[in-house]
Image (cartoon, rainbow, N blue to C red; front, side):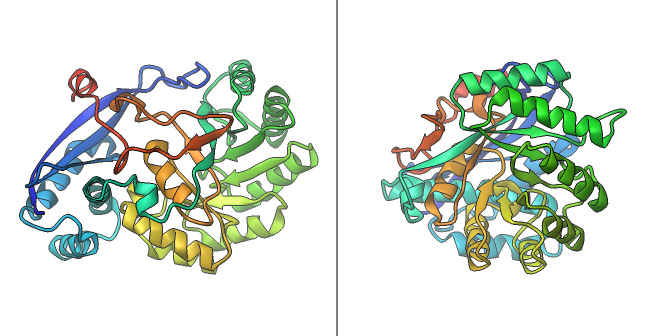
Length: 365
């Protein structure tokens, strides 16, 4: 089996919010680069990457240039492919566009391998369990009005979600008291039984995170975790917060490649390791990071793309929960749906996904 051809494109997906119905930016668009990687015996592997923003076309061009180097190569040798691409890219890595472009290719290679062996990806990776917990994400963003966020939390509860995530680090004029008020009202709306996570998106300094984190604890909100409380590579600052709070601290989604996770784990910066398969460089690196976290006795969770991450979090022994964020859902013919708060492991070979060509045509950039 050899890589024979490839096709890429860009779609601008709508920024709607189907989980609870309140979009922070309903007119916004999510630029996504998609990839079809084909073999000489007719197997097609699918991949995606994003975070390119205003230079998404440059990201697509990087995917095109890297794929062109692989014509004639064996798609089952994912490590050999990765080494070839790193060598060819010279010193343009290990983060940024190179890592994002490599992630799309790596995912497509694993999709090909699963289809070639007639196994869903999670079984190919070890098959740790047949279902995995998931949490509703993206419905309780900080840009919503307070009454909208409270209503959205109630809707998630009524839909049967067992876990959800809100955001603090509120925009505009705010205060620790205002932040705590938001957390308390959303906790009341989603009920005492739901696991409630909270994302700060690097908006606090370490001392703010300790102060507000303690106030939220004292208010009895009971957070499942507090995420990305300060700058992602301030490992010492993160460790200060993790040591000061009883609430678990999660982080890692902003890290590129493998090595920064070693620094994060060695510094005991987080209690829960969050891995993004686009920034990490794809499935191959995601699994290495999960294994590193296991060696430090740390659970791992995913960032975005639940339709792919369900396979990864469900395959590894320290997988905790899958972020159910519908950012890419319009791109696929069907996606995994929560059942009693869990995602069931897919059964079709590879990623168990298929591009919706009508959507690709409709949202083409």
